[in-house]
Image 1 (cartoon, protein in one colour):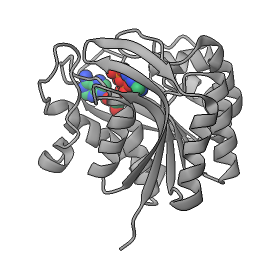
Image 2: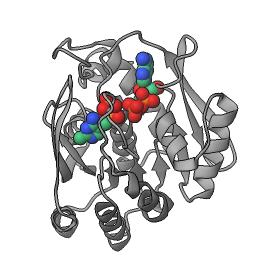
Image 3: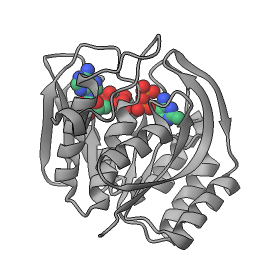
Image 4: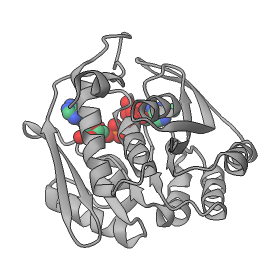
Length: 267
Ligand SMILES: Nc1ncnc2c1ncn2[C@@H]1O[C@H](COP(=O)(O)OP(=O)(O)O)[C@@H](O)[C@H]1O
Ligand SMILES: Cc1ncc(COP(=O)(O)OP(=O)(O)O)c(N)n1
C-alpha cells in the first residue's frame, strides 16, 4: 500500500475548527497521513481568538527537521506563520528538503479580526515564501494585502492573480468567500496563462470558521497523491462545500465546518 504524506506548518486552534486541527482532519478524510510543525499556539474558540503564543523559529525548524529526517512529505502546506523570523526559517527548510509541492495559505487575520501575522511579516512572506509556492490560496483581503490591488470586481481579481504569478507562485487561487455578491461563491485559479473558475452555491451561514485552512489542506492532500493542481482545487472546493453544507451546530459563535461531511454525504 502506498501511504501519501502531507506536512502542515501552521498554528494550533484550540477550538479545533481552523489551523493545524483543520488541516490534520482534512488530510485524514482525504486518505493522506498528516504530520505537523506548530508555529504558534492560539487560545481560540468559535467566539474569537483569546490569545496567541508563538513558538521560536528554532522550535519550528526542529519539528520540520524531525519530519524530514524520518518520514518525508509528498506535499507541504503552510498556514499561520506569525512572524518574519518563522517565515524565513520555513522558506529555508522548504528549500533544504527540496519540497516542490508547497501550498502557501497566506493567513493574516482570523474571521473575528484577530491578527495572525505580524504586519511587518508581510514583506517576508512576499520575498521568501511566495516564490517557493506551487499553489498559493489567498482570500480576497489577503490578495489585496500581497498585491496592493483593491479587489472589487473579477477583473481586479484576475489582475491580482497575474501579479501573484509574476511574484513567483506557480498556481494562484484567489478564493471568493469574501465576495458576497450573487448566489454563488467563485474561486479563481490562474496557471500563468489561463483562468479557471470553481463555483458552488453560496450557503447562507455564519458557521464558516476554518474554511480557508480546510480548503488549502484539501489542495495539499490531493497534491500529495500526485494529482494535478487543477483537479486538487476542484476536490478542495467540493470538500469545503460539503463541510459548510452540513454544519455541526457547536459553539456559540462562528462554528466550525464539518470535516467528515464529504466522506459521509459526498459533494
Ligand atoms: N458561504 C459560503 N458558501 C459556500 N462556500 C463558501 C462560503 N464561504 C466561503 N466559501 C468557500 O470556502 C473557501 C474559503 O473561502 P474564503 O472565505 O474566501 O477564505 P478564508 O476562509 O481564508 O477567508 C472557498 O472555497 C470559498 O469558495
Ligand atoms: C491557528 C489558526 N490558523 C488559521 C486561522 C484562520 O483560518 P481560516 O480558515 O482563514 O478561518 P477563519 O479564522 O477566517 O474562520 C485561524 N483562525 N487560526
